[in-house]
Image (cartoon, rainbow, N blue to C red):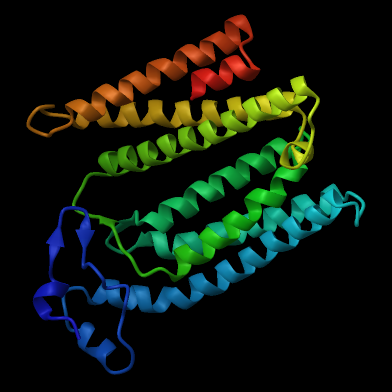
Length: 289
């Protein structure tokens, strides 16, 4: 059993470290008498709910991805309504499962798996939105299984990194910044795929993974959708976060602000180049990287 002092420990963004590994049986009653009782009971009461929702979400994701893999393999004929409805159902359950572990009575849980699950959910919804007007069906076969895994891990993992005793503005600044830079990372992966696809097309070597990808124009459009979403979130993070800065030196934020502004300027130039000069393909991918 953990000591009383450990249960009462607060350190920056880390609150009641390790409390996710709740003991079984009567020891829960002991936790109910401690200062962290609310969090302990919350975790105990929502863990099973989150796991059940995540399991159903993963099931829908795997079902949709498996069906699309059979389409790619020529075993089944395409059936987009089934694919989109199944994937959308998984996304709804994914969001419900994530809310169980990310939203706690005392703050926002930004543990690694929770943030990863949130990013996965955003990417899935972005792909669903794109699928209504673009032929990106084959991407579901790769992204949905990864979403299923991270969704279940977020529901099962006990780690907590809870934001508490901070303003709502600062909380949203941190959340938007994490999501924005994660999306930029995903955009970098997408840019690599665009470069590989462009090179394969130029060499007339359409084999393996490249053969199953959507058309190059669609992949390029999806890259810029991710970039636009990331830029909007990063701009929002700047707008919310700058008023909260009192002293850059004392708060040790100079390097973070400098690199964030450089990233914003680089991607702003890229998006302007896309709008004004029609940058696409290898040019856009190299700017992204």
